Image (cartoon, rainbow, N blue to C red; front, side):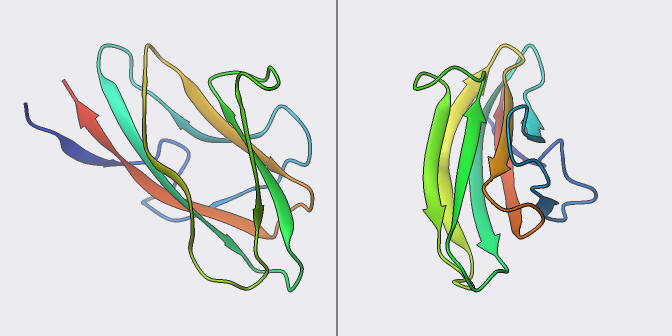
Length: 113
């Protein structure tokens, strides 16, 4: 089974995605292509000196079912936030942060057949 490495659907030319949203519905990160499955790898960068809470909406907005919450350290470089979690059936991943415009999300997906 061959995997292909693909950019996040919310990215422009593979660049980071700025988290603008501070509440649900979050900033779009990736929507899975129907008929395949994606293994999602994400890292966050916090440009603020302060730690910032980041919430990933993993396929929905119901707490706690669909939310992954974490603190992203201030000015701490790339911080892993999704270690190859699989999605399929057109699932969307979005994010919002306690502070707008300071978190950038980078990553890619490994797409399966």
